[in-house]
Image (cartoon, rainbow, N blue to C red; front, side, top):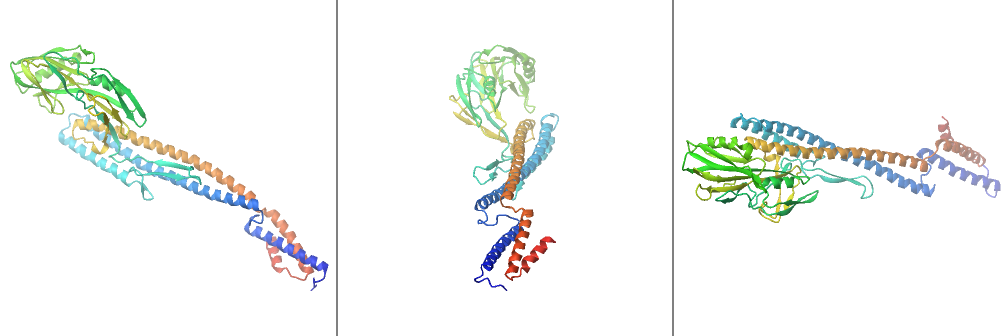
Length: 490
């Protein structure tokens, strides 16, 4: 073996051997790891950029997973809502059957209502049991944010409204003031034309904002409803009704003047005449009233076959005027049970004001702020939810009310489904964007730190030859490196 001590050529060969060994080790490291930059000393700038790109790539992959989880939550919730929508369809069929068929008996409607209550129970079961990874989705408790990036602002929020039967339906509010409450607003000894409603303004407040409503003096329920109905987001209707019965008769031939009107007065009053042979049977009077209903706007009907009491109705909500009764004394009974007496000698006239019913197809309540108590009793009146749980089809009127509640509940679930669908579509676009970011970041990382195998193999072969030459000069075998070169060649 050549001794390199005090041998300049040997010392140079030793230096070349060490350099070749170091370069060969670097080539082997790059080929085995597949990376050109394995440590900070290889290329400090590219190493730092590579670390950041690695973090970005890992974060992007997690963001894609979070986005897919968000879409899965929305899909599960949508599936539950679609089942509930089908159940609402069945409930609507049952309510329509009970509401639209007057030939059904009470026992028939009881059977229909039994099935309807079963549908309500199934409806709530779906809302209570629809969950994702143990988290309930449709009971109103789910509200969260899915993180899609390292920044707090890189998130997407999802809130799902409750679809429990107690949380869906119609928001309703009825006038309950001193005048517009389906009751007698004034009595006298001659025909009355003004109900006494004060000219006023009130405000309808909803989530979407507020709007002022102007009411004219002596406005009827129909006029108030028309003004409120012009407000977006709410629907207002009106009806006037009162029960008329006879407390005593002075003659079998009776008469009264009957008409209807609004704030401008009553201009359609007609004289109604009837012969009553049985004090408990007012059928002839009811028929006479209905014969003139085209002129007066007032119809007469009996409730549950009780011919001793006539229900007078103006379906539009105009004031009903009764005056000049003769041959009998009358009792006017409101839906609240208040009784007003009219006598043929004395107080023989009355004006009945109707009631305004306001509804919203939103599950969120609305308010009406008023300055007078003649339309709404409170200065701030809040709507209440007539919910799906409360519907009952055991009577025809109950089934009719149920139809409106079911219709609004269906609209609320449809709105939720639409929102979830839009959320899923947005997530698909987010995933596409994140996939593109992942691909570009991965490509950039490769360009910064990955090894070029063809270049590295070429350089490794040259370094191996130099190493073997220097090793031969110094008498050092290179069997281990030669074995690696043979493996590459094979």
